[in-house]
Structures are given as C-alpha cells and as structure tokens.
Length: 357
Image (cartoon, rainbow, N blue to C red):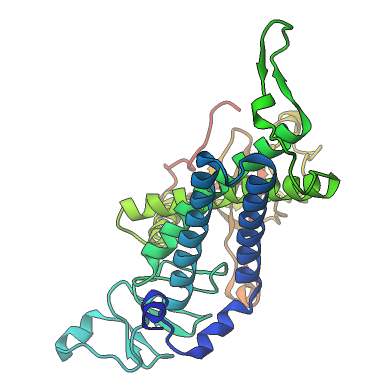
C-alpha cells in the first residue's frame, strides 16, 4: 500500500472525480482499446508467446502501457502545484514586485498564473489540459511531457502489430509485381492454427484500433513537438502567448504612428466593386474577405495600408458615436478621400502602399 501511494500521490479522495470528465474518459478509452487489441492480435494471430520474439514483443507492449498510464495518472493526480492560499513573500518589501490575486487572496509567485477552471493560482502554469482534467505546471510538467512522448511510441508499436496481423492473416505472400521476385510469408503461419479464427469481427476491430493508433500518433506527436519547442526556450505556453500578444500590440501601435489621416470628399456606398469610382478602381478591387466601409462626405479616416487605387483604415468616430460601437474599419477607394493638410503626418505613406497592383 505504501508503494502504491508513493507512485500515485492523491491529495485526497476527491481527486478521483477528475476521471469523470470527457477528456480522461476518451484518453483512457483509446489507451485501453489500442493496448488490448495489440496484445490480443499479437498472442492469437501474429506472434505467439511460445516463441522468444513473441514473449519479448508482449513484454514491450505491457511496458508501454504501464509507463503511459503511470505518467498519465501522475500528471493528473499529482497536479501542477498550487500557490498556497493567502501566500505572502517572506520579505514584505518583495511584494512590490509581485502581482496580487483577488480570487485567491494571495500574491502570485513568479511565473504563476490564475486558472479560472481550477480556481487557483498555479505555479509555472503552462496550460489547463482537458485530457488530464487538470493544469499542467511546475510539479507535473515532466510527467505530462513524458506521456506525450511515450503515447506516440506505444501507438507506433501497436500500429505495426495491427498491420502485420491483418497482412499475415489475409495473405500468404508479399509480391512486388514480378513473378520471379516474391517473399514467402508461410513462416508467419502457425501449425496448428490459432484457437480463435481471424474473422470479420476481428478484422474490423483491428482496423478500428489501427485508426485510433495512427490518429493518436499524429495528434499527440504534434503536441509533444510543440511542448519541446517551448521547453527548449525555457518558457511556458502562457508566456509564449503573452510575448506574441505584446508583439502584436507593439505592431499595432507602430502602425498607428505610421498611419495617415484622410478626409472623405465623396460618398462611397461600401460596395465591393463600385462602378461609379472609375474602371481602374472597379477592376483592382482587393481580393480579400476584409470588409469595405461606407463613407460619407466630411468624415475622417486613419489609413494604415493601401494599394494603388484602394486604402485600408479606421473611421475616426465622434464621442457621441463611440458608445456601444466597435471599430469601423475596412477598404475604400482612394479617389474618395484626400490627405488632411493640417495633419502632421501628411508626408508619410500608409504601410504596405504599392505603386503598382
């Protein structure tokens, strides 16, 4: 009992409720189907246990299953490590450099974030994973990453068994198209024949398990690749997202600085290809899903980019219009507007402006 508790550490019996979620149910279901079918196919129809290779193969299958489940339950039940409720730094002066969580009524430790689903501040939080129904953080990130590595490897082994089982049971020979070049697969057949014949039901179950194994290999393998990129940079998924968001905001701010203010001199109905704005404007309409905006004479536009006959920008709305209205932006013909002579940025051109389309 002590060994079991040292392997899987439950904070309390309430943690067992984490299994009652669609994520763990699907994940454990896929593991159970692939592992069970791989063992059955291997023993009955592909590589029997009375051979040395069959015994080694069977032990490897059990080893994959045990390691996958160990790391999976470790990631789920050990948990990410939560910041204690009401936590404060030992030195009260250090609290100036920390964020305060109003929900947990505590200061956030460095690299910690509040998870709305767990309703706790998580140490070195990476993300909240629905497949383990828990957060991935400081204490369980290693187990979660090992699970992402072992699951594709185990599925590749299982997929190989499924393919060879279906092949050896359906065909006796492997032909490369030439009558003189053939590989005899009669050694794969056993005498006596297996107790349970490889029928249609077994073929359908093996084919279904093969699809699950290949799908899991691709999906989980991609997640492992993403996690390794983040780990090698010594970051978490949240920190990478924050950096990308800061870069986007910086680019938007720079674009605002480089933008040019225009005044609408002619009305524009907002049609995709206006006939009354000239032939060149009609045939050079931007090929994009971005919207066109309706313009009225006297309005002001802040253009951020453009083509030769079209511009893209935001309407400068009055305070009376701003209430309850989001940003109005889109494409409009260049010949409907003119640069404001009073604008200090009149000599600048919108970002991305092209002389030729």
